Length: 289
Image (cartoon, rainbow, N blue to C red; front, side, top):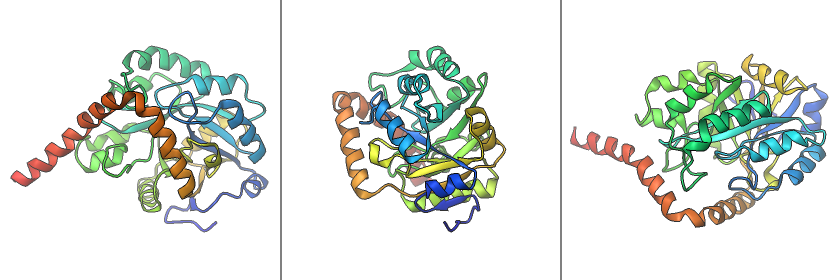
């Protein structure tokens, strides 16, 4: 496991048994289930996690049913309650809570009423309002795949770079996802480099939508509880180990996501238009200058 530029980020397949032998708990901190746009059932996820010896954070898009279900019946697996929020401008924000009750309260109070027809595509909430709404809760706010994706604004740092978000936005986050299994190596290295240069707490996860991807990227902390694990991340004690998911799993993931969005094709295209219009305007403004 040779480190990249940031000494706590390792680009290689995680040797889970070796990680546990060294006293770390490995947790895949970015997983989707059938409660949003994935094919993974919660009982199957927990069975696989127990077999692998890893914890999980279920971070469904704009939904908490999967995370709550897993927390109620963890099957001996460390489960971190989470959600991945899709901001109106495009970026995705991962929130990790210390309890399922707090996660459910946050969702019911701040998110449920902002869902759009294409529920998993985007909320009617801006990045600023999402981050503001989370301040009253005991949770970690993490920039998901901060420089992703190609051609669309799915990362906070990407939006800062193209000037569709103010530079100060990043200061309101607690951490950065430095390895996302759905991103290519170059994009993850860019995130790891940024986190290292700016001394950010780090996380990583597979972004699994199909079961074989689970555990391909893990965040490692010497802790056995949700509280200890999340506090360890905040204290910058975490290691992130993993790699991009295989081309086969990427193909399977693309098919699963496409199938889930078919019923919302028109509304999803509307969301894409709204989110990419500011970047187009910035580009046109630059041509005029």
